[in-house]
Image 1 (cartoon, rainbow, N blue to C red):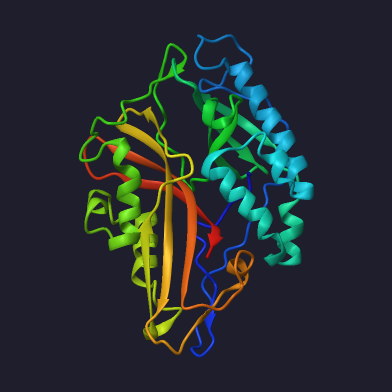
Image 2 (image 1 turned 135 degrees about the horizontal axis):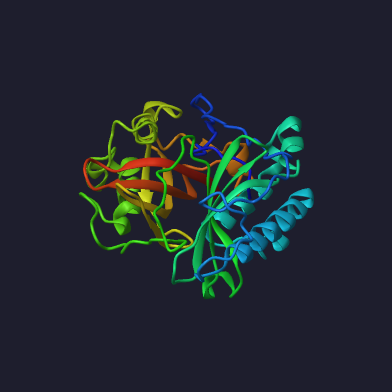
Length: 335
């Protein structure tokens, strides 16, 4: 899916006996048509120019992106989750499938925007010399900057599928290119104070404790970290004092981390997942699920457990604290 998703889809619900404010409902903004300018590689040369062989050639990566674009646009027209599963996998597919399931909760304008075709332009590929994945950056509808990971493995059914889709608001630190190929880093080797393999736990700790444990290794001055900590601090506000709300990490659908070396450190692109448990503290109260939660379970109950799947890209500098450059979550289940 190429639509820009909310950073974190908070639950929308009220209690039967306790008025609760609706949580934020950020709209999906569709990636609309754009120009069909030349597909450029990292050096500005046409993507079809011969390059050293990596996981794929630039020309092959270009074709994979074309195929994804075509199938995704077709699937969006009828919200065909089975068709979309042929080009998406992991937590990204879980998020996209949830979008289809929750489609009827959108406004008429959002529904129209959602089905508007999108096109990838100004393409750049970061292809490692070994492995079964590559990164791609592109523009959609002329303004949105998309950063993606495609993988071909047993987890993706042995075909190339997109497993990560992010929309950083600022340009990412440029990955290093050596011999025409990107330079990955060992995910278990610390860069500064954090190894790439520890990024998932660090981000989830911001939700779980407000960043007092693993999350303390991340820059709390970063806008994205601030937003997550704000979510943690305000987690009970929509239900008032007669309920508790807490976050707990869960295993991501596709629990994998990808790395790209930059001149100042390493980009870690990784999976995220957690559940949000809301529990009333008074036996006489129940929580009435919001419209998105009701897609999965509309029964009023004392405990609501919402599951979220997501992704993030974090820059790990050799000096200073890591910064969250973008993160995305979507509600994928509610019980």
